[in-house]
Length: 116
Image 1 (spheres, helix red, strand yellow):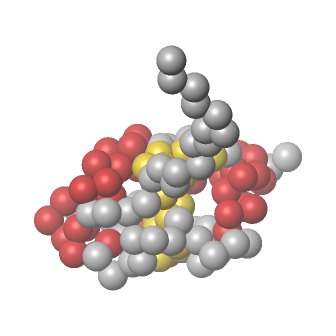
Image 2 (cartoon, rainbow, N blue to C red):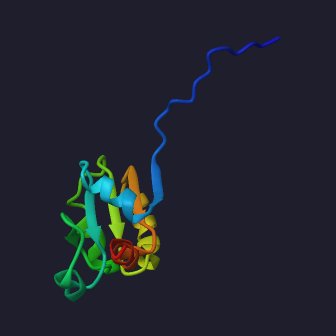
């Protein structure tokens, strides 16, 4: 007979994707989180989340650009509406990032949430 007691699953498992709403994103931005705006430069230049770095999604250059970020710190990513952010997850995973947050609905949801 085998008896297991005191079993705990506190192992740190990497969280590659965690969708966050605009309010949660605002909270993340007040913490030590790296923020990447995946939109085109002209969209970023018009407006962006405070502290965001603009790295337009381009598969050839994107991996080189994200290599400059700390893989052990959380990353918040967003695009226009959330679609491109989802596509980039595999690139973050394959490059060793431990935790990546997606702004659900992208920048559009951020702007819409701020209207109220």
